[in-house]
Image 1 (cartoon, rainbow over the protein chains, first blue to last red):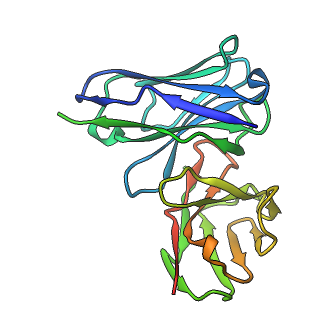
Image 2 (cartoon, each protein chain N blue to C red):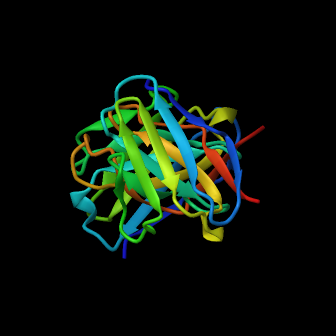
Length: 122
Length: 107
């Protein structure tokens, strides 16, 4: 069955960096676009970034553009999110989510992981 | 960005009731609308996509309708397991955006 396991969340100070990863199993990772979605405590989900199956195409939310970088390693079935210049408003549970097809235009996400918590606080 | 507005924000209903949640988009999204169910402490689960297509394993008491800018999620006969927060999401264009959620409470 499809499994997505995120890790790397931590407590960090504003301005610092953090790298999240998501390990996928149960499906052909290289055949699917992938997304990061976050959810602040008590709030609704917020889409963060997307990447195509081959890693060549990417989209970012305006709130993270220029600070976050999405990437993937298909040889390791791993999705990454490099987060720089973190702000207190980046505090959230970060989910990786599988798109239902391969290109960057595949925006329907059919499976989500359990999330990893990022807390940005001084 | 396309804004998604859900109503009501909280809905209290009894077991067996028919309940309807509305979602409005700030511009035409055709039928590129998904509904997610989120139970406390868990990740959102895709329930309906393309406005009205039920995901595998989702009970048939759930249904979706609409196109353009107005959409609805209906539960025909509310069950205790339906206690959750429901979010609509447009996936017509980036940035993908979610509604603010509707918390469904059992009376």
